[in-house]
View 1 (cartoon, helix red, strand yellow):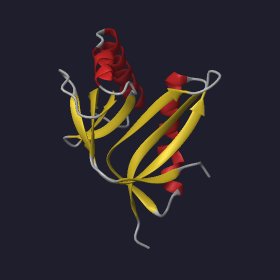
View 2 (view 1 turned 135 degrees about the vertical axis):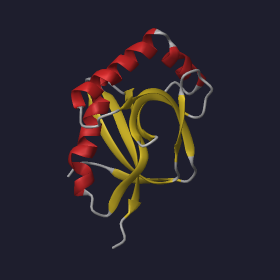
View 3 (view 1 turned 180 degrees about the vertical axis):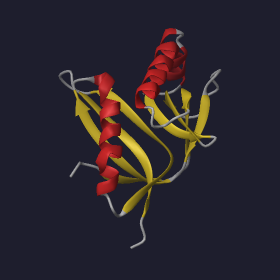
Length: 159
């Protein structure tokens, strides 16, 4: 079984990010291309760097449901006024925390996402994912290794 933890967040919080709406959630290649293009755009125009400077410098890959459609983007913890950015509400409650490590910083968030949605959520029978979103961060640790965590809001299943 995959390593994970359940952690309780006691207060609602916000995240601010730049993202894209995904029209067809099952178009994996198209969605990856749209997401990569958005990341390249906000990196090239320094919008992501400006947002990181307003916050604590930790970047998150954020998945959220906006207007009934999947949204994926990149941003920070907290509410900030940045032109073209979305402010997303994350609710207090229990969160499934899925960790991962890799030498490949650029792939780690996707690897953790795959681990969570590719089997772990089906293995855990006492909690269910309730959203409305999730966020993953990656940071450098030692010797060229990177550590990351995905946080997904869950509810205990009545048993």
